[in-house]
Length: 147
Image (cartoon, rainbow, N blue to C red):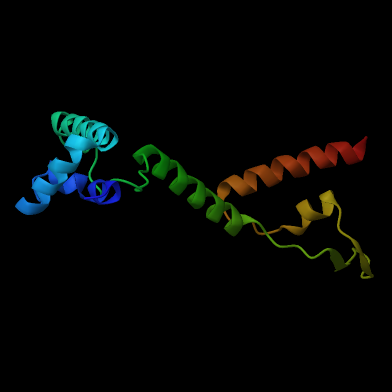
């Protein structure tokens, strides 16, 4: 038996899966070849260490790996933000960038909308909080306009 043949059959020999006649031929080669004998001993030490170590214990189940967990409080915060954004979007009036409206004397004036026009353009608030905020804003603008 050649060194290459011994190298190919070493694992089978160590696990005792080699046929009897091939096992005897391999042992005959090991008696005359120090290099193959040393390689067989090294492989035997590795195999023995693996048997002593045993099987590794799984730290998690395959179904748990890769799963993203969401904390309950994070889901509640996200739901509150989505609800708040939806409520706010429903309460905001959409005012065009150009405004055309009649004045007190009946003339129609067209121009850009400024901050005070936005406050005055909203005549129908959607809830009590909006009415209160609009009243405060209108009062502060009236005081500013008087100065």
